[in-house]
Length: 402
Image: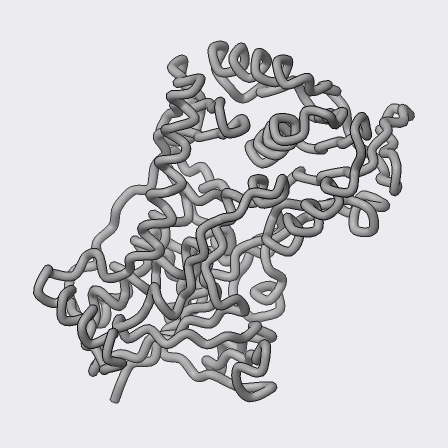
């Protein structure tokens, strides 16, 4: 009887987990189901590019997972019952039954995170986001409708806010782009990193409101905590992410923010048949510091989870690899970038790479991450990889391998 593995979510972490499991497990021993509401992979780290009108290369899942044994189910997850070991899903675009219940033996929870309005009045009604494709496309339409000289305000000075503000300012130099940050601009960076960031921001004509907290958002302005009014025809809210709420509604042990608490193999500490990866999981990194929500954390978490699941099913030693950081990569438009080198626990070092070389480096990182998702059979021995391609081309069943 096949061991049933269900993976929820096909972002970077879910897709990587499914592909890695397919490489390590035999098809006759396991069934692999990947649940996702979209038929193609979304490069979330490029949503600021989508917002300014750039088109990304399509990456359909049916092509990516052809011949791997991974079954893609186009559906939205509506509930998880970890005591009965079932998942309830609703089909999208007529892709199956309106409501369906999937049973599992092992669950990989990779539903990730989305936009977080922080409970600030007016954000949900008036602000825009780049946390996913729908939000990025809405912002694209809004920016396209703005005439020269109109104000755009990006709220949030983290990586997402910096990338959004610089991308918009570079693509639309006719707009009046501003950035509101709670602290000092780039205050977590090294001296070199902060200096370069300031140089790029000033060169793009971005107005920076430092030590500014936004208290309310209206259709044409924001109000700060100290009573100022900042004009904005398009407010982009990038102050953080909120995890998917479904885990909190289960009996899984979660944090106060709804993240599933996992051990070093990404296994739930309360339910051993559940694994969580990416933004949905609370995992500890070097020096007992929580891993931050990022692709840099999520992909290694996916590798660890897949390897642990495969090892436990095979009855072999479970590998444990410490997840650490090396750099923070920030695109500052298409021509500029910043690579801030960091310690294992994500604190800035003195060294930083800047300029066009940093932009090229960041682009290489993005392409590498997408390639890893789009080539799930890349780890197969060459003969098996050829057979997989041949059988997939003829619609045949392909056996995954350990």
